Image 1 (cartoon, rainbow, N blue to C red):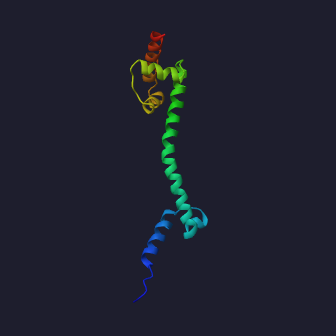
Image 2: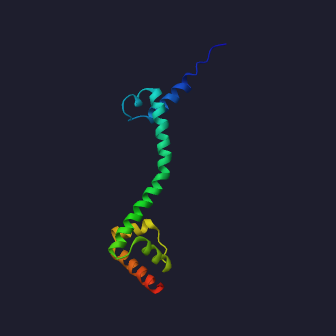
Image 3: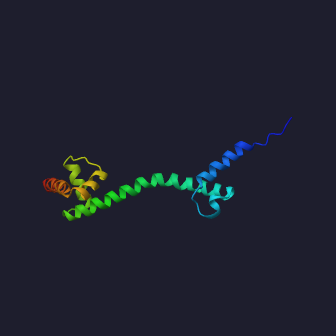
Length: 121
């Protein structure tokens, strides 16, 4: 019986790894052994950072809202609490965009939050 040397499957697997490693620096892009490790590590970073991205963006939005709220004379927590009390439900991404693109709309939300806080106190 003839010997089967697993040629095509092995070649395809290696080509796939080297294709994924395209653009890496030095031997990581051409040498299968090092490319395999680099691609595996890149996959770990990608998996981790897909989750991390959600945290990072929320943090950015909160920072932007906080800065805009301080211009209106409120701190972040007072602003959010005032909106909640006023029954205004708007997510942080939209609030952040309002703070940047439509300062008048953000200002009206801030005055609404202030009114609610004063009525609550």
